[in-house]
Length: 462
Image (cartoon, rainbow, N blue to C red; front, side, top):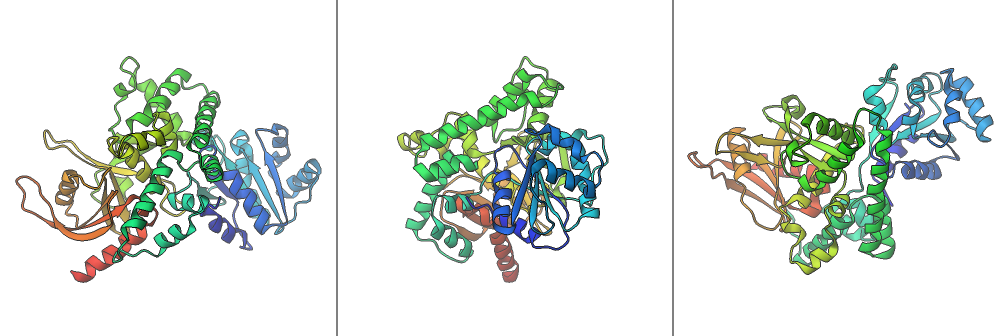
């Protein structure tokens, strides 16, 4: 189960002087697995402390002095901790906020010791902390579900992954290879990127087996509601958690969750699920400049779920639906495709960057428009439309190109890739030429590279 963050962590491990790393991500996205693999390949030993299982260990860190903490840890764990040879893993650190604050002193006083901390509900601590955060003394790494490229490696299709790595915007793809990749995309839609579900599918080839894992993960998330604190009613959490998967692609309106409940209560529940990284906000950005987050209108947003496999399970969609109804997932109002693209875009930046996702919503009488996602490539703002099948109008994209004087756009669909000079078609407005890069869903992991190629090609010809 290869994760691309591993190379990033290996580079960190090989540095002589390094800051402690805090791995952030939802429960069961594979944080502990990656750390243990790193220890196995890059260190002589691993000392792992899980603060949920061992709350008694928290007291060892009270002195905030690593020179005193390490000998005490060695005594309690019965293992030597040697700088440069041992990886110290502090897991479920959200159960020990004071230990998180202590990490700064490991960097200042024992910079040669490799320390990684992780926590599934860490965002709650970071939001409510009442201690001095070790700003500038630690580094974050953000981990989401497995990507489609990681999925290809997991299901033993390395040749397909290699093909995607070497594909360029001027290349052609044989229809048989295209169809093969689209079929694997369908597998990914149903299985998703949660490592345990992927591992089960890779081992058995059974959608039912992976589906049972997804059911268990969703149950685990619901069990965690009790750990969210007392600010949010568990009933509200359950309602929002149950409804969000069916609302992907829609502008958030709390009446869609429950008309009888106060929006304030549902908003609090949604924020809690965001803190648990089960739900992500797709913020509306006016996209008038860079960075996109500077142009955000807070009250207008959409949401996506953590993972497309979890979403499909929660909505009752299975591989049987695809086989019994032609293009079943592709005609599910595009929500599944939008989720798939969104979760990849969310974690498409460097691992140290805070994940963020943006869309563009235009509300102007009868001329409403919505561009599914907006991202930035250098100084260029790129609108991205997701179309479920091989065809579909791009009215909103055309509107965005006109209003933002945009010259480059991206469409994801199920068709073969293409790069073309096209013109907008907006009622009452003169046509405007722009470059449209159309990509099949399986190239989502290579979007930034292909955009860079396409922009270079477009700028060179103009």
